[in-house]
Length: 141
Length: 142
Figure 1: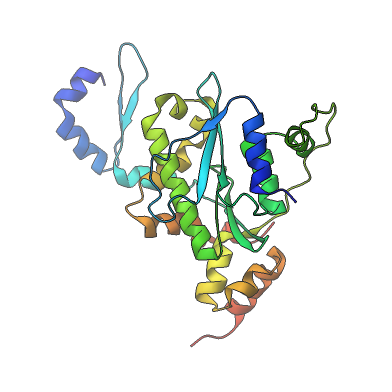
Figure 2: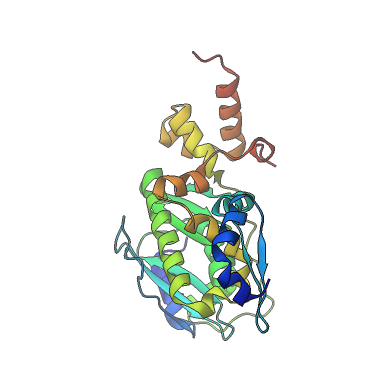
């Protein structure tokens, strides 16, 4: 599983990625992450960030989103850069995104239905939806 | 309406906007602008909904926001949400500071979602926009 150290290595070894200044100065969780950006000639940017805890695992689902939507590379390309290999031809695509829990559903289950966060976050999207439907169908005072 | 006429009649155009009458302001060179009320803009932007995805993995909670391709992460859902709000702050500040980034083709597609968050009065409203219960047609999972 990829760590933030791997992600930082990729950014350092790929041309164009530079530190992004912390403009908003993190009102809530200052300094947990370092941001990077890669600016294209048309002004568009790829953006990502790296936890300061470089040994921390990113987690497969978040890692896939970062690869696909922030770095815009395949998993094979990513690892070939991290390991210092030349980029392989005909890389297999990054695996399919696995659906996370919808944010609104997490909020409803924790704050409205009163289900402990640890239980909610262990649910599949289908189980979470079923739990919410069950809660709504129950008579309430 | 021309820009010079709009300048002279601005108070009455504001009154018109308040009763839901938009004014298109044209310049001889350059793009047009439209004056509408804050209320109308918010109503239009309400259609730009967010569908954040929550992951629990590697002992941490992550919230991925697909509409803006940013994420928040923390030891609990509340921490991940606050981290995501910081990321929103950073993105909005960056867009204000960098016109090239704001006008880049990829970002222009995302601007309605950006405007929606930027118009929020405080963090509570932003949380409601990002994590509030969607209207009934969007509620069921695919």
